[in-house]
Image (cartoon, rainbow, N blue to C red):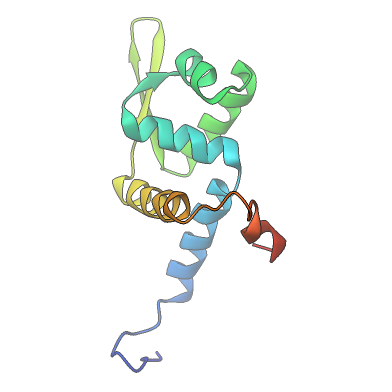
Length: 118
């Protein structure tokens, strides 16, 4: 294990792989928007589709992927399936990233991260 100048150990390969998988799932703007919306409160797929501006089948597929990854959970309420955030730590990361980008957003520099291959 390698320790940096501040005394922190490098994460294990397993931890890095898990983090990369979570970031990979959130690399899709629609999934990121869905997670953002669910961080504000529970919702069913029809309300999520309306909020994020996606087609119902597409939002449902995104929810399935997020659920399989353990980022989102669901429960039945009558005939409705209600979705909620199942990993609050991921919400913290998403809020931090979106908040930082929103704070420093400049109209003259849209998409600057995309321009560098991120």
